[in-house]
Amino acid sequence: MKTPIPDYLDEVLDSLRNDTSGNTAQYIPELAQANPDLFALSVTTATGSTYSAGDHLEEFTIQSISKPFAYAAAIMDRGLDRVLRSVGVEASGEAFNELSLEEGTHRPKNPMINAGAIMTHGLLVAEDASTEDRVARVLELFSQLAGRELRIDESVYASEMETADRNLATAHMLRSYGILGTDAHEVVSGYTRQCSILVTVEDLSLMSATLANGGVQPRTLERVLSEGIAQQVMSVMAVAGMYDGAGDWLTRVGIPAKSGVAGGLVGVLPDQVGIGAFSPRLDAHGNSQRAGRAFERLSTDMGLHLFAPSSGQLDVVDVHQEATREIFVLQGNVQFTAASELLDLMAASTSRTAVLVDISRVYSFTTVARRMALEGLRRLRLDGRRVFLNDPLQVLANPDLGDGTYPETP
Ligand code: GLN
Image (cartoon, rainbow, N blue to C red; front, side, top):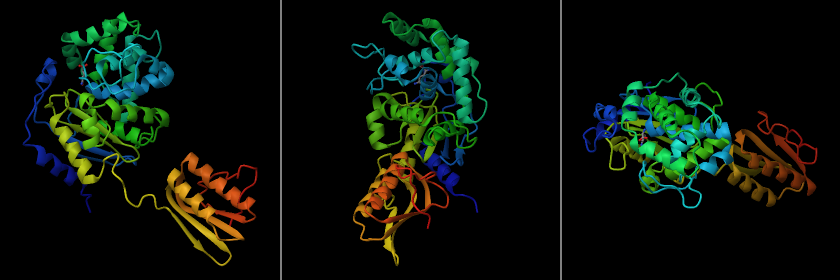
């Protein structure tokens, strides 16, 4: 049997091919000349399976899709507090290249608009790092995220530098407010190189699947980012990834995303998938027209909206009575909601003698759910019952009830 997912992705591309609205990025000469008909889509699951369709081997420059990943690098290098002092996390509601800063602090509003991304690039590595060091830093991180060695398109870089007046003005403005310490030309040169890194849609889907997977690259299994940084990056993408169209995008499509002027689009759904799409014609906001529509289809057809209520998933606790014991059976990934359901059921427990919590079909507990389950067992025992835990896979490694004692094994 052949998995039907690539056929489905092909069908999505075919259904949108006749949409030729919009135009390639005109302000960067090399990008203006791109073949406007290219169209590709790639989905990588958080477990590392990739499905691709269309021109998925075609390389294009990452452009603004570099911004969330460079932001991750800056947080790793300098710490979140330091980064937040120079770049905010608020929606800007403005175009990507708007020359605007937050009132009072003069920070760029977020790292997704150019002002914030240029500032973020300037924070990379260390205060006194060279442009080469900063570019090498993003190239290295992006390669780890994609799981292959990436390179820079020098002609797109040179072409963009010829018309980089707006970005240079932005960097000078940041310097004039004392926010940016680095030389304006150097930082724009480094940032533009960062934007000129070549990727395919598969690279993009793997990079974002790493975010979806909490920072572990799902194919190389390397921990590239901490969970906290992955969470920070996905949050900022949801708030500001689509610039002035961010609210419309999040409500309609519901996939935190980031676009680039070469026509790329990356999206992420925590714990589920990373998605990459590519089509060079852009809409009025500078986002790829057909890639955006492909995301819309995926969201509707595959139920990928971040806030789509998923029925049934919370129902992971079952309780029944056996001769002398009351048995609580849990399954799947136990989070706060399932753990609170368990505690409610324990509170209503009718057994006077013994309870058994069976987690043989649980594959993970969140930290808080683990604490809740153990606290429930501790309280039942304080109430005078024997407590048993069936945990053959040791998902609750070291189930200390908080007082140095352990539940009995069944
Ligand atoms: N390099 C581009 C710029 O700075 C990136 C913009 C984008 O992709 N939206 O103008």
